[in-house]
Image 1 (cartoon, rainbow, N blue to C red):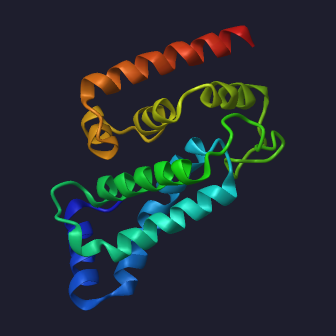
Image 2: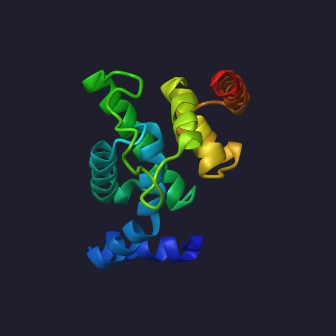
Length: 177
């Protein structure tokens, strides 16, 4: 993980000297977390995850001059990614559920899914897009509520409500299976 100073140095090199190697370093640092974020939002659709991650990095590179350094680069990048996902949802109107996910496919890239993994997938699929985003950022990406609020543009009190509702939905799904 890059420090805030390292991030600012890399962003400065990108903006001032059009140093693409510096941007490549930022991509390498944030790609795994961003892909994991999208994998959870897309319910394991690796192709869509790759497309969204690529679109996010391209947009970030093109808009790098607008990065002010008020938040960490990762927070700014996740905000772009969050917007890219919702722009995709508005454009495509895909189905919500596990219909497009092959349950035998390895979405984590390391171990084959077992029954517990499929239960969690089903519970995540039962959440709304906003709830799934909040759960992913808060629990999976281990971000504090303040950072989740910056990324999503949702007030902290509302985030707490989304988290509570998501936990209740997931608990109900997991208890019935």
